[in-house]
Length: 112
Image 1 (spheres, rainbow, N blue to C red):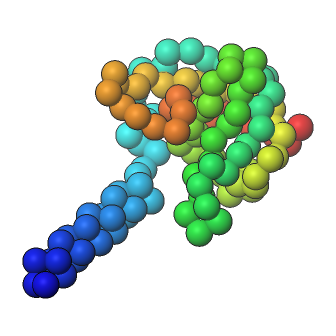
Image 2 (cartoon, rainbow, N blue to C red; image 1 turned 60 degrees about the vertical axis):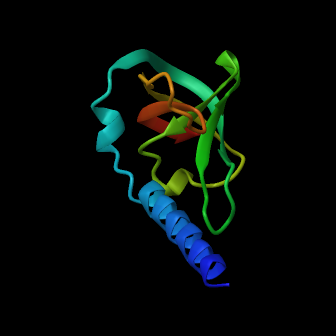
Image 3 (tube, helix red, strand yellow; image 1 turned 180 degrees about the vertical axis):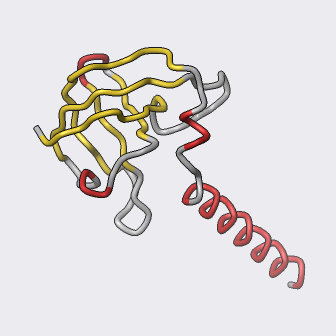
């Protein structure tokens, strides 16, 4: 029984640590990466692919059939299914990185 309780506590600690790491991720870790493509005045839709308690926002970019994972999305655009026009830089991702979409640094965004 003690092993079971220890296992539960360990898994809980790992989960909390992962969640805190995701929430504390700073913009700087993406900003320093190499720009692989620059997008200008493109149309997309902001989507929350997380939950209401732990939102994760992406930009669905239909023109290239990819999801962009913005590292600097401002609070005013954090609304599910919000159409936007945006410009910015797609950033390099390492081969084994598995994220919600291509890292993206927003340079300009407005409501569509």
